[in-house]
Amino acid sequence: MDLLKKNLLKEVSGLESLPKGAYNIRIDGKKYARQDSANIEIRTKNDKDGIDIIIKSSAQNESVHIPVILTENGLKDMVYNDFFIEDNAVVTIVAGCGIHNCDSTSEHNGIHTFYIGKNAKVKYIEKHYGEGDNMGKRILNPVTNVFIKENGQLEINTTQIKGVDETERITYAKLEDNATLIINEKVLTNNNQNAKTIFKVDLDGKNSSVKVTSRSVAENQSKQTFKSEINGNNLCFGHVECDAIIKDNARVQSTPEITANHIDANLVHEAAIGKIAGEQIIKLQTLGLSEQEAEEAIIAGFLK
Image (cartoon, rainbow, N blue to C red; front, top):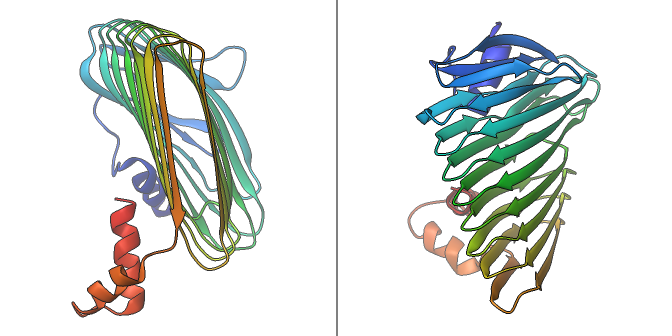
């Protein structure tokens, strides 16, 4: 692996070398390296491009890395990954995609489906990153399907803070009794970038719950769209919070949709969009920061 690929891999997954435990590293549309562990098995799909990840009940506080990097100009990559998490398993899944291109558009689309067993606990970490000159676009379109059984839990942490020109992130989830879904999203767009996020969650089970927190910053002429659809179909709790900082000539749209189909459904949506308050900048300037440094510090803290 050359230095360019190593740097991309580190950006999206934190890896500086092959990790211990299970992993599948995909480079330019092909498998680069793979390893199973005693409790995690990775299989190549027979009917389409992608992998099945089987996480056994005996997996306790283990991790699996499945990053993707693209360095081939003009490549359009598509992958289907299915996760089968058995009852009582506890696992962290580190994904992410990094693109480096020059004079032509490169694109990665991924469809990830999670089947989470009873009492299982899963943390899923996904970072999107792009670099290169401005001649070729970098496009990332992830789709995540989630099915959580009784007492299961999934925490999704997604980050996109540099270099992605276009993205449409779609997440669909169905939760059974006492199931929990937690989603934390951080997005920064600038120049003419466009980011769209769609969440649809069906709270079918008794005492099921979802908490979605989205924080974003839109700069220059970039555009962001956030849409959430929460359906409370039982005794359940749903909370969606969308906060955005807008700068320059950017545009941010937030569309909440919460539907209670049960008398005991408790659903809340909060949205706030605005510019950085002048008093915040002045306060930091009194500590010796320039106006630009003050803005950068506020944004870094907001997206932390």
